[in-house]
Amino acid sequence: MSASGGIAALAARTRRTGMPVPILKRGEYLIASIQSTLSDADLIRLRDDVLVQVAHHRSRGVIVDVTVLDIMDSFAVRTLSALAQMITLRGAETVIVGIQPDVAFAMVQLGLTLSGVATALDLEEGLAYLDDHAKQSVHGGHGSEAGRRN
Amino acid sequence: MRHFTVSSAEPTSDVLSELVAHLRRNRAQLREEWMRRISASRLLTSMTQEEIFAEATSVFDNYVEVLETGSVEALQAYARDLSERIIPRGVDTPEVLGIVLLLRDVLARSLFEKYQGDFALLNGVLDAYEPAANRIATTVAVGFVQERERVIRQQQEAIRELSTPVLQVRERLLILPIIGVVDSERARQLTEQLLHGVRSNRAKVVVMDITGVPAVDAIVANHFVQTVEAARLLGATVIVTGLSPEIAQTLVTIGVDLTKMNTVGDLQGGIEEAERVLGYTVLNRRNGPPHMDPAQVS
Image 1 (tube, rainbow over the protein chains, first blue to last red):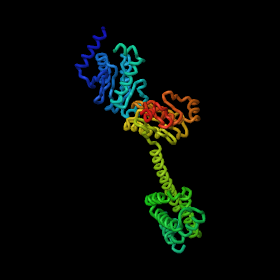
Image 2: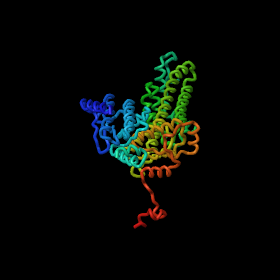
Image 3: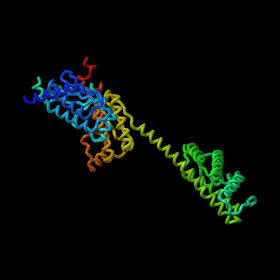
Image 4: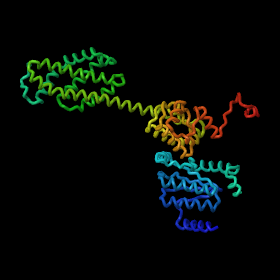
């Protein structure tokens, strides 16, 4: 595929510049654990990195842990929404975990509700959500996706 | 006019000091007259005669002192202190204002009596007396009203604290009974409490019962929608219960979009729905189906 060349190049580039957000593989899931406040460029890079990794590991779920973020501006919310939609196109699920109460309140006031994106309290809850969802996709719903993976 | 020697052309300060001297000389008599008129007007009925006497003495002395110095600071402090003491006794604003105005009248009468022979001098004395007396009445009234407002604010705060408990019913299940009027400030507080409750109890489902909310308009409904969305960002589902038929009618008529809210009729239904979401089954050990009763299976 011609696309794989592009993805490989992208992966190489991210490897060269270093990853501000470590992306850990845990079984069929990827965990992107944000460690510090991110710039807009960092967010874009996170989005690209996660997409590359999902393709590479054939992951079925992605968890983005935003526990340390004490600000979620419109760009961050838009980027994470886009990330979730792109990952859905790859046939995987995304869960945003660890949004702080104060951050959630501020987001709602600004009308940034991450609609259509799954959220969970913390990493543990996020993993539980993905486990549940994976079960559902085997039994139906995303039947063709599940079949192709097995 | 026994001791009065200055003419009406004298500067106001001299008139005032003469006035103060006069009031001090006749302190006992004026105070008694004032007390008599207080009881005649049926004011301060919740206080005993001794209490009224003690307070009247302090008010009288403060009053004369303000006339003398022109500074209301000491009176302000006294008015605050007095209000703090008498508000819990159920003394009303008209009563406080009434007694201060009575004192003003009693003193003015005494001045009339003393200077009735010299009309020009009486005018001068009243010119000095009236602004000061009005200022005193204003100070006492304002002090009283401010104290009342402080008490009311304090009580509102206390009611707010009391009326939004976040309670855990089962593991991962919270209920939030809302009672009373919801305004923007309270909605903010409520959401904050709920979000912290979700986090600290690791709740997955919250049942928000609004049976005790008297009225829901577009603004309040919007607050509830925001609360629901904020909780979702933390991964919790909110079930709203207790929308009365009237409120449901209002909301549909004014066109509030509540499609994002998961609503169930009453609190019981809400908790049952929450248990279903969390995977709990509640069994009645007496009447439950035999095959589901562990005691009978074994």
